Length: 279
Image 1 (cartoon, rainbow, N blue to C red):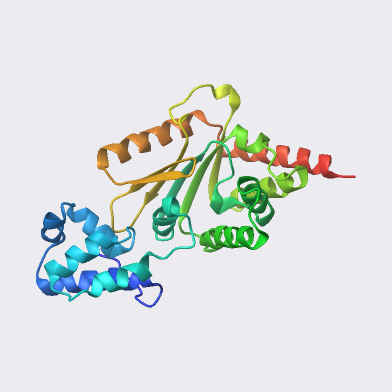
Image 2 (image 1 turned 180 degrees about the vertical axis):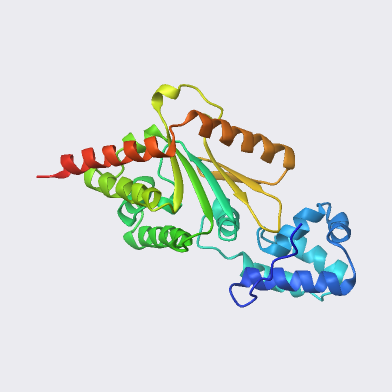
C-alpha cells in the first residue's frame, strides 16, 4: 500500500488540519486504529481525515483534543476547516472529489457538475431557485465552475461518466444552451480527457434506476460512494455498500453504448439543438 500523501498545509484550512492531525497522532505514538478505537471509528476513517478525503466534524475534534492532549487545537480550527461554498449535504463529497484520483459518475437527469458550461449551470440553478436574487445564483454558478477546474489538469483525475439519454433530451435553458453544453461534453470526450458513455432509453430497466451515483478512488485512502436525492446526499465508506455501488456502476457501463457510439450520439443531438437555435 502506498504511504500517506504529503498535504500542503497552506493550500486550505482543511489540508492544514489534516496535516496537523497526522503529526499529532504520530507524535503521541498512536496508530490510526488506536486513535479510532475511542472514537468508535475505523483506522481507515482516521486515514481519511489525515489525507483530507474526510471532513473533521466538531464532535470528533473535541475527542481528538482530549485523546492527543492538544489543548483545544482541533476544536478551535475545526470550524474554519469546515467552511464550504457548497450545500451542507454535498460539501464533504465536493472536498473528497478534489483529491480523488478516479471519479466515476452515473447521471440520470442532468449533465454532471464537473462537465457543465456556465450557461447550463445558470439555467439549472435558476430553475431550482425561482425567487432567489441574482447574486445568490452567481455564487452557485461560480462554485460550480470552480469545481470544473479539476479537469484542467490534462491527466488527473481520471473521469468516467455514464449519462442517461434523458440528460441529452432534457432541455435545460433552451436549444442554444443545450447545443453548447453537449458540444462541451463531446469535446472533452474527443480530446480523451474523459470517458463518456450514454445509457439509451431502449436499455430498459437497470441497477442504477434509483438515482445519481458517484464513486471516488484515492491514492492513499479507501474508496467512497456518494448517492444524492432531492436536497440530500450521503457519502459512504462502508466497504460492502461501496462494493455494491461499484458493481452497480460496472453493470450500467456494460449496458450503455460504447464511448465511440456515445460521442457520436452526443454530437448528433448537439447539432440538432444548434440547428433548432438558428433564426
